[in-house]
Image (cartoon, rainbow, N blue to C red; front, side, top):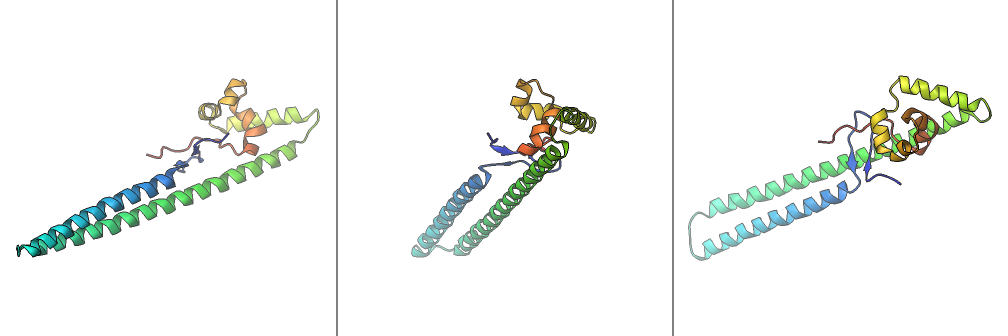
Length: 173
């Protein structure tokens, strides 16, 4: 079962799975609001012309400012969408690399009577290096804590092959 968020190694951001959808919705809402404001300003301009009221230059400036604001908002939304896609792709590449590393570990350790001792030695060395981050790994992977396994032992034997991240993702805020 996958989380609704993709956890990245230290130094990366966390991207919610629905972030691109919410960005599109936010952009569409902003676009509709700005268009409505521009239409309202255009309507006021028409009314003033019909009544021969002076000051249409101000309304033209307001319309131009609203259109410029709309272009800036659309550009910012597109940048945020592209950043989210880039981070999501990077996260998937890192997950694939972790899975490959886990598979290599499993192949290197092998099977048989001596394999358990090799797994335990690897887990002890990983724990000494702070891999994985004990508290966060057990919190994010509740199954490991429920089964009474250590974070390092589980990560070395199973977690890396499953693509579980060894460290907490940095605060996205």
